[in-house]
Image 1 (tube, rainbow, N blue to C red):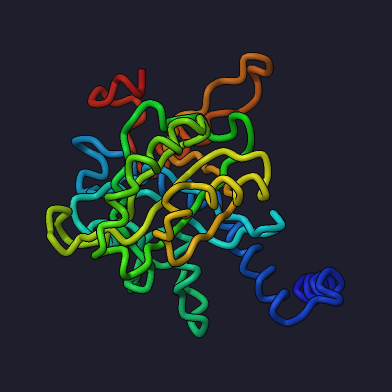
Image 2: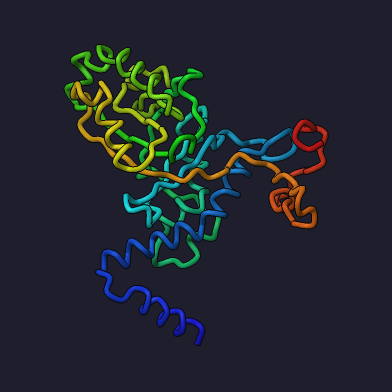
Length: 283
């Protein structure tokens, strides 16, 4: 009975939508429903000491939920994972609830709920060389809302020296804008970053903008874009997910409010929440 009622509700809410729209909204709903599980997976991945998660070889530095241009749907994710090898990165990704949902076997209803390894080779990976300059580290959401640019170079630009030629102008443009959250070139993902085959293939740029029109105008006037470096440029608004937090601060205004879900979750996982090994986090 409950299932029939849910189907009727879905039918009413989807009235007038095309089949493609229904699929897109279904994917959006699934992704949003798994957001909390995704955050807890990332936080657990980032927790390790001498007695817990000792084999962890990948940290989730940040995770951003990519939004559609009309800001109505979540359509993807971009994550920054720090790991010594591609294998370690893929092993961590294989346990992400959202990735498992996307790659699950539709014929096996339990495929997303077991711990069996899954093949994540279809998930595109790049090595991102973050430009670590304090002038390119604005808070996301300051003077606007956070956007990202994912741009890939023209094949010819990889050999004609154009990227190197316009780099200083590109960098100055970013610094003077005072809106950059993080920026850096994308490289081919190789087992070792020193591998000569790890060539630059594009740019990942996180920045603040007033709205989509302002964001598009900003990236189109980048000297790199004006010089014809890029073959494709995609701009998206995104939501930042807090995947690094260990504890949630106590609410001083409402002291009775339960704000220690993360600590309770870690204790459930078996993490020694009062251990002496990471006292700078626990005490």
